[in-house]
Length: 134
Image 1 (cartoon, one colour):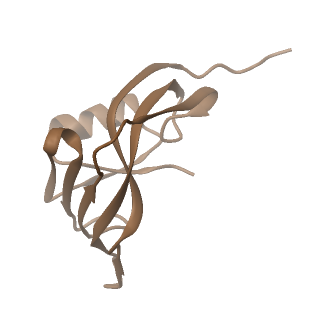
Image 2: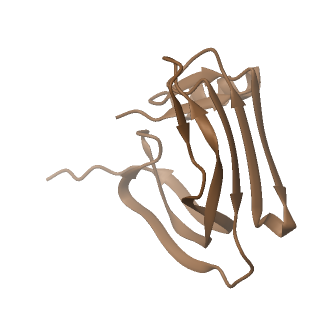
């Protein structure tokens, strides 16, 4: 299933079209991500007239601690349903989320106290996805 991805500029739209044409790209009226406290607090805002999310306002908060190394991806695991694969390691901290998501039908999903993840760093290698031929 293709991923839904929002962009806030013509350059972002062009990048998605060229690099990840398999994803469903949506123009955002507002798209902002701010971090505080050395990356342990991340605040995101989205407003869009298009796509499966019309508004989102979320605050991810992680306590002090040592991040856990979490491997992800690998050959054959596509990025956003694309022709690329990515393998790497994230440095994750468990977090809790405050906020809400508004769907096109006006329904609201509250995220008050929901579990989340804050990534304090990441290393990954993006390569073309390989197909096995016999």
